Length: 363
Image (cartoon, rainbow, N blue to C red; front, side, top):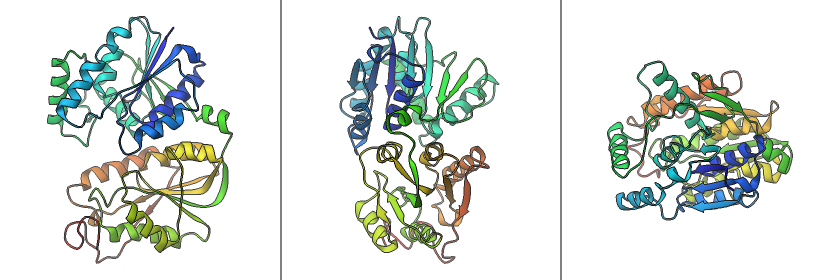
């Protein structure tokens, strides 16, 4: 009989589901995994890599991506019954707190516990949001990349389709972050014990791993600035260099950068946390921008691992992106102070922000 339902929308959340089930010693045959993961950009394949190594009484997949209003409505209608199905469950685990389908399902619990699975820095944001509400302050947007107007319109549409989206009274965060929530919310910390039980602790090897990011593809910085970051990393190490490409990075850009700066492309199916655990080794130094993986790899690598965040100066960031980039960089500095060293990119002083000298990330 299903007693616990896990609702996730990403591979990192699916990993959190497996970790939470292990930490709470829940029986496999009482746990159901609901995958609201779009089958695009390898996202569903990354989740399946984790699911294959874990055992669930039942796994449900969401179907086509909600990339149009019609598809979104169809998905909401198809899954709104999860609320009535939640009656009698002991626990519901939400990977994406702001996901309307998951929020609606959680409201169906009679007297069970609601957990918020680790979703990277979004977990920190959810805690800040709920604390602000508890203290009668204006809360931050749960989806800063989406306008408040669009978010409210979608919420109105979801309610019109029968979803219940009011705030949850109490949640327990299952997270790597040392949160300080407002009562009655609570925290259970985790350190990837399920991954360690499955693969052991990764061995730290000499060298540097650079976590790629679609900064050029998104128009946040120029290709010249991105190259400067790689050059900075190359010049700061004498050892081997690995590059882990982001799924949204252009393949030809990654190949050109790896050849130019002598990086080895780190292959593997799934998210970087899974790859590091499965291959049983990890570069001693990890460098990136404001990636969640900086946080997770710091935990996986332990105190002997060096994790660095490269900050981007305002003059090299597209003006309309700067407020969001500034917010993300400040978040990295505040939550990881004392644990992560921060490097500053001192690129070519004549370089421009995206717009005039390069088009679509190409010179």
